[in-house]
Image 1: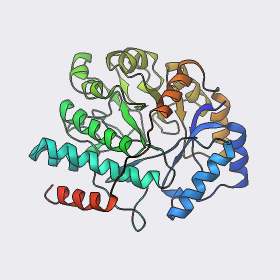
Image 2 (image 1 turned 30 degrees about the vertical axis):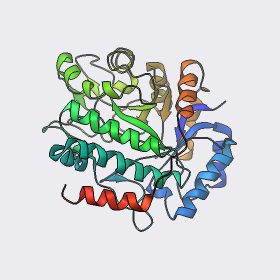
Image 3 (image 1 turned 180 degrees about the horizontal axis):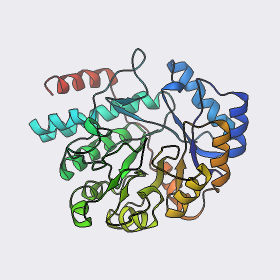
Image 4 (image 1 turned 45 degrees about the horizontal axis):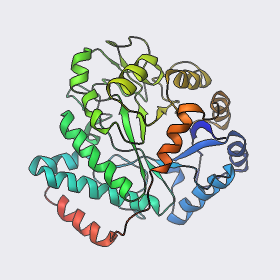
Length: 336
């Protein structure tokens, strides 16, 4: 039975050591980065080899393909896509057109991914940034109000699923107020709970039925003054599962980020104990991957139920004229 783990590999193809590790560790899924991307043929071969290693043809393969600063696939083999704020600008001019552009852009991204065997995109972002926040979110966000962010995020999720790719809602329950980049250090948000519920958390509530979500390595001191959301039982139970109402498959952000403390094994155990279903670990050595894998049990109980449910909702893509869609998307984007 697959472990509660999503892991990565180092290059364009599996090394013998990585193949052996994947066979033994049996992670639920994999995630790709720019270092794993060369040509379409190479990516397809890498995806196939990872699935062969775990002997599961349906093992999920994830990627961060947002557009703007965060896109692992790009020219010359794949188009560049705009950042999330682009859809917000169109929305400000014409809300219906903004949602249509977001839906179409996501569907084009998903078509790129599906052709490679990539089945999950870590998108949409429902973070609501404030002016004083660290720029790590910045123009990745769709806007600065919960209603606008939720509307565009929903359209993005629809576009991904229309082309057979699962969305991942991030970063639960909100990274928009963080004054630090959690890749480097632990952000602490001191805003009171009522304000958070009416702004940051509110953007996620309309998206609570999405199949997958990713936590934020952020402390919300008014609710849990010690642990970041990823490792906080209170944040997961009361806010993510409770107030927001998210019942999908919940994965952590990368365990190797400096916002978290303790050994990698301790981080993995704390994440799962808090109520996350899966841990994400990337950018580590083979020994570090092994340390995390050893700390992750097989998926069972509610986590297994949610994982199975997420995979069941992926549907076959409907007929889609990609060339015509690209022309339409370019026209929508011309004046944004």
